[in-house]
Image (cartoon, rainbow, N blue to C red; front, top):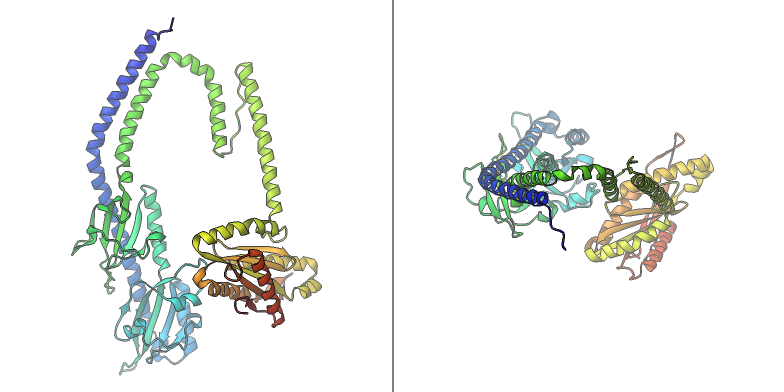
Length: 545
């Protein structure tokens, strides 16, 4: 005869179902009423956030324009005779305002007379807008690439560098006020990305929003990396007129609907603005999340109340199973990778024995895992410099090949051999040589970009593995090689004594130079041999041979 549920069980189940249905109905009614209010509030908030960023961009641009205007009235520029003094002035401006990637003083004939770090000095830029426009009046150019300057400036990330041009005429302080040149600057667009992140981080603490900056023709110049350069055909951006802010639900190019707020740049003070528009967006799921959360909370609390009422008769069983729940929770947190200890419970003999057994098992597994991690780390890193060793290199190269093939990239292999290292050992002993090798390793890490690797092969030999685009592989590899030569060519401090060494580099490209990676390693070794015999302190590539 089947066992029928008790009256207590049926009554508890009926109450649980009734409370759950009432909670769902109440949550639906409240959610429907609050949706429209929340969407309106969030939309206005997004538009206000976009306005804050637009205002910050305008004010920061205006402050830099005013700064250059003040500098242009300094006597050292108005006289335009002492080139070294002008350069020192410009470099001081750049030091105080690092967002200026380059500042230069251009003679009336369009030739750069003085510039920060001497970059582009004596170069003729008379055909470029930064000179032709700035010669007549204050000129602020829109965001653009500067390929020549990008190659001269340090770029650890290896990404395309973008700039905003600012230039204005400089006149003499004589009564005739003849024009003596043009003061020009390239403002790094990375400053705007830092500003975007500074505003985005506190906003994302409250909601998952994104910022974009678009030009007058609706092209994205600032935002997530994948959106840069893309057109943004949003109806909300059309016919803004005198409106400062606007918001609404928009269908974006990815086919999804977003709650979108926009704010138009109106300039600040003498800076008239470049027609930029700041756009902030949030997914509809995220926008509706508060209302859904409210509905869910009501339903959850209703179900929780129903469950409490339904299972009031089983409180005694819960009391006896509480130790097992504590062990299970601790085990779940351990499975998620948290540092947690299995509690030592005092209950019945069986439960106490179970907790002890699990504690011993977890301790044993943790000690074993820690020992394996330490052994693996020691096996794949050089003990002296902390760099990856040959074993780590052998594991890294196949993955680097797969990644390069997937992205249509190449691998540039650079063999490095220190010049003049033996005299360091002779003069300072092996302790001094070890100290110098650790400093060499530190400088090599600085020369790397994200995704690259440098390994110590032994002694004073190193190998750098670079991920470089196929169309610009040799140029980027040569640029990194020159950066390494310059870094290692600087003075070292060994036992508080200044010492100098050099470096020779041999490079080859996979798969451009050979389809087999081991063959490319051999070609790089041969190129290093040629660099050594060509006078050292050089970088030779197989492609050049």
